[in-house]
Image 1 (tube, rainbow, N blue to C red):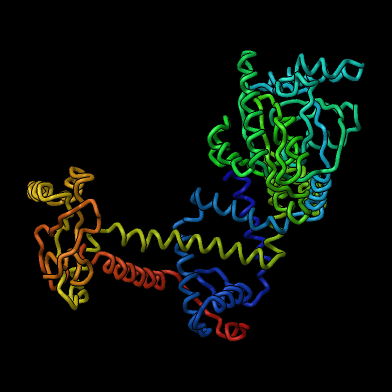
Image 2: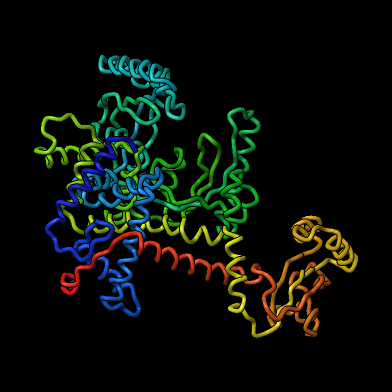
Length: 575
């Protein structure tokens, strides 16, 4: 976080103080006042989450300890950690988003996209790539401007498309891409394609990939989406006349067969279709709309009725026989809205920048007096809004404070309790030795190594390997040596927890190994214990108890280190 952001946070803190300075103070922890509104917010939230709600005094004591831990985190300057600052910056922005969203403007963009989706547009364009460098992009744009001027002076669009367009799928067809539906191409490209009058030439349109010049095409009502399956016989561009004739004969034979008996369509697709991906699914494709498939496949799929089978259709890839399975009309506004909003929220979508500009323009107007004549960038304008929200929106302020202090509390607890207990082997051992009497078993436990082996010979080899292996690494080393031939696990359990152990140690009935590929099992060097032998025998219990001890010690240190004053009169007025 740079100095500007640090300064902004300082301003935010000052603003927060001014916003709450006149409020009654419930308590003061290490010189920091807790206003009644903050205490009430957290108290009520806690009450809603508790099965057995706490009394006010019980919660006040817990809250005091919570604030002491936060004070300790601040004294350790955990709030200055880069990761913490980055997390808070992101959370603050996310939390502010609903307050800073112009719903009217967003809905206008949604409505615009929906209106475009009511029709299909014939897309005709010339495309030039931007290039990999800024200089190449400038040269490409200059070339696009030159072609645009030629078109305005009467040049033939189809000829220029054939000569210059990098979209080879359309360049040889006069730049014609076929009919497209809204929501699948860059925003500015689509807007031009759907709004140009037939024959009208667009300005140069930018997309993430390149520069486009569009020519207005025909429009027609949107047809929705279709679900089809097909059988394809591929005709590569290098095919000879004989190969092309063979493909045509094959597709005609397939067509005659499926028309005579439609029930065999999917079986023939699996056996004969050259589109192996869909062939494995009986020829079935995903739902698609106009412009998502090559012509004339696209038109044929929409033209036939549900359950009808098309005559053989030739595309640039080969011959197809198509059967329509289902069809749906255009989606409603409610159905489309989530998808449109998702696309708008993508920084790659041109509307994302429009939404951002609309936001900044609105904030500049809102904070005109604060900004004055200063030439502030977008981030600085947002900082002013964040400060305003903190001072004027209680819900925003409470959530932000709660998240900030919760994150500090988590980091401090991680350092003082959780990580320390998990990693302090000496501390765990010392705690266990000092509290051995607290860890008792009501039943004897067997401690050893359970081995499941493929056969008796493997079992004997495992015994020898365990005997020769280093004690500390025995299981790990031998397990690696006998991968696929034996399963080797340390055990510490009482009777009734494992049938194989019961049979091997506690005189239980014989059983089959858990894994069917193993035929024999045994417990290597079983040791019967009436109480835990070492800390590791009850590590999880010791770790939990040691954590609790560290927690108690920490709290006692905090109480002696940081002063706390409770205003009982204000506390009793908490709603």
